[in-house]
Length: 150
Length: 419
Image (cartoon, each protein chain N blue to C red):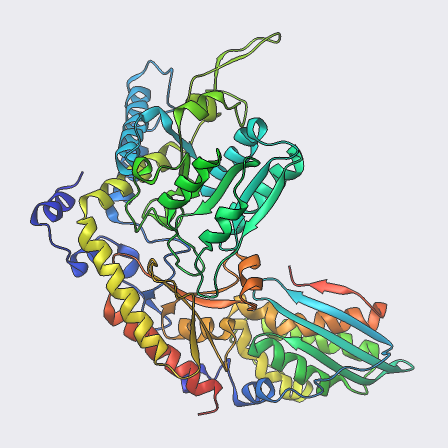
């Protein structure tokens, strides 16, 4: 399976099979629905804030492996982070999935999210990888909303 | 017509390897693997015959058509009108003038919905479409119904993807103005019984528009035998260029219909007080058309007609049957759309993998398939699926390519089932 490993790394397949934080938060401080019309991915992200910090973040929905794993790993990566830290992390994540394939991700800062660096070779899949993030930003910024990748 | 195509006609055989040589795009590698192009329902590859005809037009005859007195304009006009005869022969239309050039199937349907809709639709009138339709055969009718105050009704399908003719019979009435139905479904491959539908619709006094986008490159199109009133198709799904298509309509209807767009070429005389329109088809061809596209379309249809159509259909049927067998044998794979009469389209879903992931992993192995809702969101909703993966065949595909697809899908299963 080596030729698929750039995109479909074991960590991504694992989060697709067993998504983490895959549940609803009742009465969340914020939530948003994200939709990718291209492939029909649809997810809802729920956040609970502790002041400026993310206390709990979860998601629900259906989609491809890339979007589901991205949502799952995002929830693990941002817990406890401030709004600004989340936005900075998303900026880096976005740069990583859209940048020149030869650029290496900063594993130290990106942690497990570096697994998504292979996405940049598949422009059609960038929206799958970033859907959860766009939805999260809507949830923590406005407290509610609907976002679409189109 | 090139000698090569004539040769093929004369020897009457259907040699796929020789046909593949006519399609330069097929001879390439993708991600280091030989390209296996199975996205023909989206668009087919183009034979050299088409590319050469278009290049010849631009390098030798390029000029605007109609009213030109110079030689190039005359040659361009002749080629443009000559292609109309080719299209007429291809569809077995009674009259060249019934062939209207449009941008594609979508524009053809919009033309009919807007123009014929303006004389046939109104409050209390109904348009029937089916659950199988492509958005192009839904949305123009929704718009026309809204504009003219008519009602849109939907003919249901079975779980196998066949039209419920019994329900259609009950829905048809004196209120029915138009039945708009696909010749073959782009998402499932189902071939609809057009002749039967036309008979039923005509008994109720309704006109029938057939969306032939998926059929023209694969099935015989004989508008007189089908008995429809309008037939639309796109060049690019039938080996021709993008941006050009055909609307055929019955002369008696076309003559009653108002123009769709105004502009140059569609008029007889213009003054600020009163403009008079050209006769059919000029009335519906405003502005400088896609002349090179028309010439490419003519070349594509010549190519198809020069092929042994019976052998070609048998070949595509064989690919469909073989692909259905091979794919059905893959663990966790379900073929969606199992009507007995299908063109070469296999839509499917897999337990462990989302269609989008299937598409990417197939691409990594050089296999081009389409994934998504196939511009048929109401159909996906009817089937309770967000999307499917779809392999669609054309005359130049081979059993070996079906094997490559099946191998790729085995890999998908292995990867996602954790094996």
